[in-house]
Length: 95
Length: 365
Picture 1 (cartoon, chains in turn green, yellow):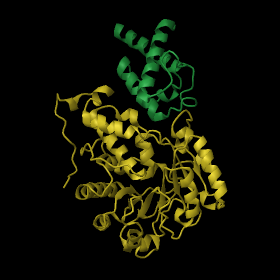
Picture 2 (cartoon, helix red, strand yellow; picture 1 turned 30 degrees about the horizontal axis):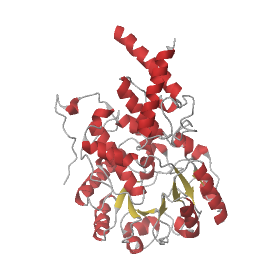
Picture 3 (tube, one colour; picture 1 turned 60 degrees about the horizontal axis):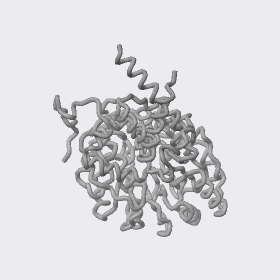
Picture 4 (cartoon, chains in turn red, purple; picture 1 turned 90 degrees about the vertical axis):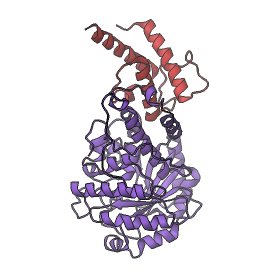
């Protein structure tokens, strides 16, 4: 079950990271459309996405599979992916 | 002179750690500076173009004259090439590689491409000088000393002619292709080129599909190639664009595809992002076929150690190399080398590591 509020927080944070890492202009975390296609509409390439994935891996202390991040082509998908990884992590920690 | 050894890892030291945050890796100022330098070029998106189906020499083992692309009719119409380049820009392509069979035979088409697409490179045998107005990197293929070139390429005094055409030309990078038969000649070629202040990088012969001739490498010849590369890198650091990680990646017993999973469309069905999405290899008639699209079509992927392939395949694997400072330094050296070889005006920095670092998840050789 997705926790909407948590997802929204993650979405804002991911947008913030995206803006900072890729030096995007004319957009804020609040105005960044989570559904916009990062490849087709923002022009992000695989190296950019890899960079963002590395930063997210750091910030959320989660494991991101190399095969996964190329499929995360909008912020909503990234946020849901992170949320799922955090749930898995907390379940693993609980034993 | 360097020897073939792995840098020891002391137990309990930073090098012994198995998990690194990316931010921790970047905390090293030297790494951070190189990272910031190379990431400025992440916008490069390449495609390649056969310019003509003619060549003024015929080399044993040439990948161009394998497969169907050699039978494509030439499109000699500058307007058609201009239209293609403009369409490529719209598609997001920012870098062109003009290759097959010999682009210097159609300089007017190279000019058209350069006017439309300012960044690129040309693969040439160097026998006919390309006008200075085509301000692309020019990769001049060298396959041994002049005796060997005469035998394999049927062209006399090849290196002498190549140097005459491209000495003092900032566009020129001489590309020495190590075959099984010319390993020992690399020293005299490197000496001759460095004496003329020419820049040199290395390629490793990658057999076309079905080729079983004498140029194909064996484990033994790859080992000798590795030793030769390391020696020359140490002897001519100011004239050789290469790194120790290039040596590892290109002389490994496994091919580039087996080491890194090739990201060109021919071996990569994904169109999500990256080369699988954007790369095309145009034939001389300006058509392309996704099923055969890669930088060296008709090369046997299980034998591919080609420098052009590595430039994309290794470089694209940023994520898996961000695992430790030493591995990331090796990757940065590789990317720094790639940019110096392929991009006009990019200056290579000193290599960050002389360690022989294994590819992620692989044995060293």
